Every structure is written in structure tokens, then in C-alpha cells.
Length: 194
Image (cartoon, rainbow, N blue to C red; front, side, top):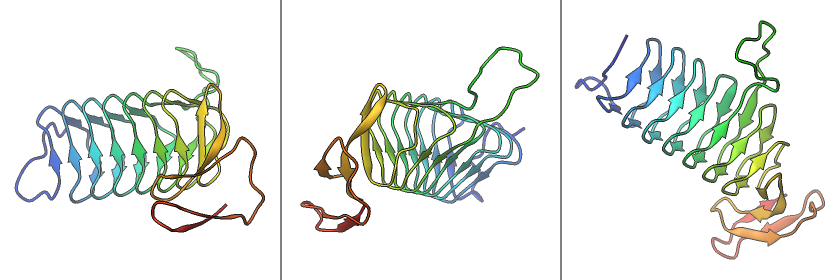
């Protein structure tokens, strides 16, 4: 197994304390920091940053320009798209009925789409999709799908508004907006279709 990938022919950085199993792809410009573990078959995109003690399970695909902060575990069955931010101590799950020994264990998949931001200590229950550029507040328990550009937080997480590509809050609301609603960002002036 590869304990250290730091030689001159690599176009990414892996800290000497990280543990990278065989058959892992790491894209150029990525930085893998202290005590990170990446399991066999994982695919890491370009320009990613993994903070201290991140765990990436077997066969997990992670897109380009992803930042995963300290002490996050990304388990088998989770897919993370491009430009995603995952705050410290975020917890992903992959089993609805966990037992220490279960011969009938069934993997339940989770999709985190492009541009999503997930705040510190959020728990993401398996079997959901988090839509593009959605934002999850710190400490939230997310147990249902989150639509594109939605701002959700709480326990359980509920709709609190909508956010722009830049992360600015577009509209605070607890009610879903009608389809084809266009909102303009006061900060970057982009138009966002809800």
C-alpha cells in the first residue's frame, strides 16, 4: 500500500501522515493533509483540499474544487459533485438500519450536487439528493431532499430561504417559491431561476 505520495512526478500533495490505499486517483493540484485516509477505488478530482483526519471510503467519487474540512467521514454510497464545501465534523450516513453485524445490510446512496455548501456538524441522512448550490446550515439534520439553491437549517432541516451561486441569501421564506421564479442577487447581480 502507498503510505506516502510526495515524489516529484506527482502533481498533487499528500502529507506524510496520510494513508492512501491502492487504486486511488487524485487529481492535479489537490492537497491531502494530516492523518487523512482514502480507501481503495476512491476518485478525487482536481484542486481539492482535504483537512486533518478526513476519511474517504471505498469507491467514493469526489468532484473538482471540493473543500472538505477537518474530521469529515464520506462513506461508501456518497457522491460529491464539483465545487462543494463540506464544513468540519459533517457526518454522512449510508445505512437506514445500522447494526454492528447485519448480513442483509443494504447500501443507501446520497448525492451532493455541484456548488453545495454544508455547514459544520451537519448530519446528512442517506438516501437524499442535495441540489445544486444549496446551502445547509451548521448543526442541521438533513433527512429529506434539498432543491437547487435552497437554504435549509434546523433539526430537522427546513426551508428558510434561497441562496445565490455566490452564497448570498436571495430571499428568506419558509414556503417554496413557485416554479420558474427568477431572483436577482443584490451582491453579485446574477439572476437565479428557482
